[in-house]
Amino acid sequence: MAPYIPQNYLPNLKKYKYQAIDKSLISKYVLASYWNHLVEIFPLWMAANMVTLLGSLHILVAMVLNQVYAPNLQDECPRWVYFAFAACVWIYGSFDAVDGKQARRTGTASPLGELFDHGCDSLVVSLIMLLYATVCQLGETWWTVALVFFALTNFYMSTMEEYHTHVLFLGYFSGPVEGILCFTLAALASGVWGPGFWATDLVQLLPLPASVLAQLPVLTMAQSVVVGMGVALVPTVYTSFSNIARARREHQLNVLSAFADSVPFAASIGSVIVWLWESPEVLSNHLVLFLSFVGFAFSYIVGRVIVAHVTGAPFPKLNRMHIPVFLGTFNALAPRLGLTKIFAGSNEVMLIWMCLVYTGAQYAHFALEVIDTICSYLDINCLTIKHKKTN
Image 1 (cartoon, rainbow, N blue to C red):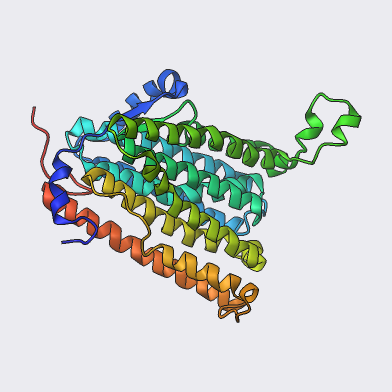
Image 2: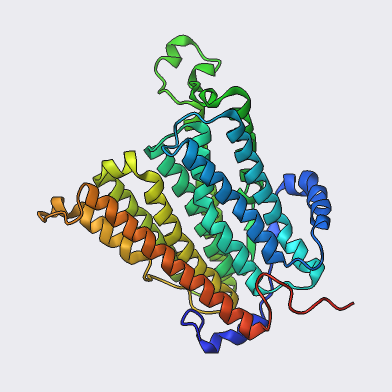
């Protein structure tokens, strides 16, 4: 039996009921009809998780193109590459939106579906932000780091909120809908006008006197996207904490203990920022590699929360994925502590590769073990339909 789901929590899988609230106006009035027609193209013998997987693979295709044409997140790609980015991310978002509909069509909705869906989402969220960086030519800079971390924070808070409220809440602007739409439009813009479009100074476009504009800092179109995400993140996080507090009070549970569940994630993000700050060579030359390792660690951390959610287990705190993050940060801080930096220069790049291998292998073990455990207990398959729907 996998260690990730203790035996006594397995019965909760059969009691689990997925609940969601989507306040997106675009979902309701624009995309709902499109999704209802799209799901009809999938045959009834196709499992919903296969739809999820096929959609996610498009992000990997886009990342391969990215590494071929703009591995530094700044080189200008052939125009068709930006159109390919737009198509891949749009297909991913579309498939992600209809996999639940496919599960209901085939009568195969299960806790595994939510876990598989969110697991794939957590893996690709950082990759999509890296593609965004390429589309806007942000490069290997703090702007890209901020872009990725804003997205990861939003995803983690949504997952933590779902754990405590038992409802997945999507606001008027959410990553799965408006975020995907914004990326698609941004990639199309780069395909039509070229990525240099994003270097336009947004401040100079404001209808203000020249004397006032001269006092304002330079803010390109690309940078304004990052600033906008950061500003939008504030009310999003506030809403998540508010919903958690309300749910805890309704059940007469301690609110602060629930808020404390955000501390390990905040510590991880803070540690990664310190690591990059102390190792500018990593930031400017190996950021894609570094954020790939961070992405696997994040996916594992989020995956443990989702497993706890569908099984009714206690909220997971620190785990083995925090080890490479904290050790790498300690190594980066060693000179400030009067110690010798064990992994310096090219050796630090080797350390990041080791972290990537460790986190990738650990995540693969976690995913396969959890899938096997749930499939065995619920007598289902992951990527195929074992029991046909009966009318």
